[in-house]
Every structure is written in C-alpha cells, then in structure tokens.
Image (cartoon, rainbow, N blue to C red):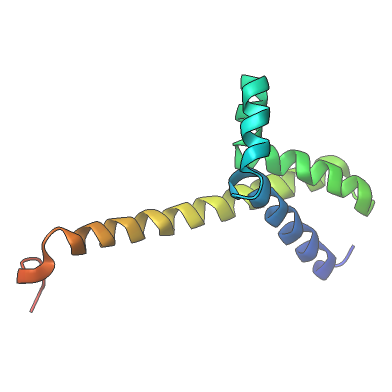
Length: 110
C-alpha cells in the first residue's frame, strides 16, 4: 500500500464515520438504533468508536491489517471531528460576542 492509497483509505473511512455519527441523512437510523440499546447508542454517536469499526471493515475489503486500519481510521476520524468541533465552538463564541453588543465598539482595540 502506497501513501496515496493510505490517504484515500483514511479520508474515506473518516467521511463514512462522519456520515454515520453526525449526518442528518442517517438521523432516523441513529434514533432507531438508540431506542433499541444504550450500548449501541453510545457506539453510533461516538466518532472514535464508529471510526474503529468502519476502519476494521474497510481494511478487510482493502487487504490491510484490520487492527492497524481500524486504529488509523479511529484516530483520524476523532482528530477531524475534534478540529471541526473546535472551529464550530470558536464561531459560536464570536457570533455571540457580536450579538451581545458590539454596536458601541466596547471591546475593540483602537
């Protein structure tokens, strides 16, 4: 497996994990699974957990070591999810700052 195949594998698994964990398309499936089992609810709503299982199954199809593929997929999915959530939190913070009274430029440095 060369570096390009590794990138394709990693980004593909990460994309599939994001679809499973946080897409609105699969929300009815997540709700159904969550109603059946609290263990499966935690599994399907956790980026690192879902990334592991997506990577395990995908590595079997790609002819990779399943544990290695699952670990890479899990860590990369968790990293991407954490970065996206951090940027989202920063955006929400700045939106709230602007809405709370930046009309008078009280917090600006001039």
